[in-house]
Length: 323
Image (tube, rainbow, N blue to C red; front, top):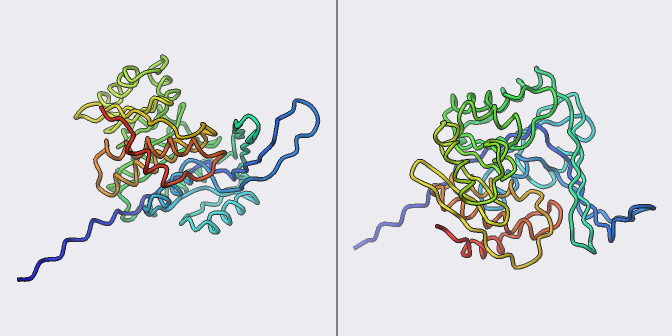
């Protein structure tokens, strides 16, 4: 008697990301940051960065497929494109007139502390903004999940992410949003599939500090009851995160770190990458969020914006407390 072969696991569709204000991230090591005189530094790394680009990198690192749609302007924009090509990240560049920004991470080796210095970026006109939106719409294709992450550059209206949400919904895809300030508040007016916010962004939404899981519950209940998000994930620093859906709230307590916290640059982006990768593969929101908490914990163990260690992330996943 023959035995039927087990069906192949479903193949996750590609994740599409949008980065309106990318960066070329330079990470420098300095022994001790002196107040006067020269500070001799060593270049640790130079990499393409910005919310959606970091998410696309994280998705690929976790075994998923991703395409990053991003702006690119002038010489720094051309360098950004070269870095993405060299790294093998699939991307679609939208040319703009302004110069793409450069950001600097200073890692002080004596104190093991990082300083992330980020300028505001270029100014986009209305035509450039709407052209980016058209390119995004054309790129969606079979992608079920689109991640819009990072700040908006000058010149774009605060409700730009609301227009993104409408375009993605019309295409039958789901929007994962990770931004801050007016761009966040206006973006939620259209409703998104999943919102990830940190405690600072969450406090801005409810007008008071977010320090505990109870505080995060108030934020998430507000987001769900107003229809701003179907899934709300609020992170609470080293406590972990609260994942909320219409079925209830789940506390995900961060694992103990096997080393010293070196830098939180990119931790949120990597969490979103893990969340979206697993949702695209068919996981439930809580399981996806548990991996996100573990990946974020692994991210803070690396200096600057360096990629997280996947083996460390997998080991930490087992230590995430779920209640």
